[in-house]
Length: 395
Image 1 (cartoon, rainbow, N blue to C red):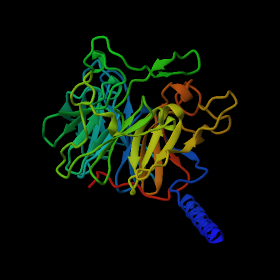
Image 2: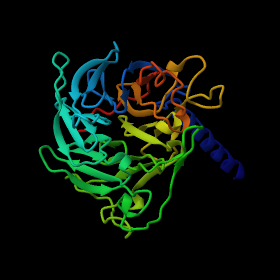
Image 3: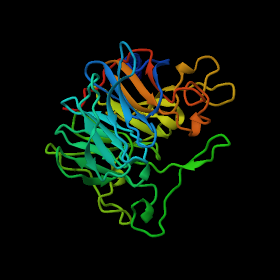
Image 4: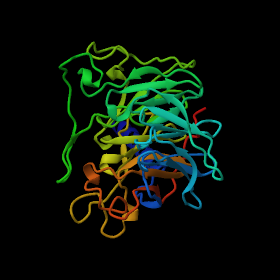
């Protein structure tokens, strides 16, 4: 009897080992991923999206006082910067500083900038100036369309965690809040002298250590119609659920020191140190999450179904100075503060904004950001993915 039990256990072990090995062999990311710069940009960039024809779109930032910022289309097969639209500055003395981009079902480009969202139909022959789609969305950053054509955005570096829904030709509505890092009234809490936590980003001198309060950054809807939101400060992902009619199902109001529409902690989907500094996110056809983790100069993959931890697909190697901000041999092979990922078929790419934070400090090292150098770049994984990107906008 004991021999039979032992043999049965051995068979189970061998089968599970084989299943584990097969599962590992079928991982959608290469075991030794590498990156190469696809294209550099004369202006800094942050957002990135793409269309179904193999083109990427990004937008320049801080072109000058009163100067419009160009939106570029980049053909993955023949990369180059083609201006297809312009985001105007809000005044003659202000600089446009756009961040997130998204395409709707008709192929129009939507761009977040400051407290407004603009849109236009891309045209490489006569690049149009964008029209204002919505205002009153302070700090608007990441953008995502749901299956009903509603546009969603979060409040970025304001740190209050607000997430808005903007129906076509409809009013801007604050639907919920990600819990901010503190519940004092400076961050939307209800206490004059609140409590919370300061997540300080430590980096090499002479750059000063700085707090990280951004909790509502990149957004992405999955095929089930639920929303994932990247929490930069906590290194986390939140999952917000909706019914088939688009009504919010996630629990709110569990902490009386926050506003009543603040998400309960039960909506926290994944928190992992590998996600510290997570910025933009993108989904593949299986609903799994690909994240550009800016402060760690890394790309992280998170399985949606199941309980496995996140996996670091790539992180800049350590250079001779003990940092991860440059390479002694080939700076076009590293990331420089990756912000927004996009999966075009089996091709993974990310924008790099060269922010002077954590692993990317000092930011003057590398391929971009130094004297006379370009200020932004798009990096793509050299190896094809074992999966494809989820078609956008989600249907």
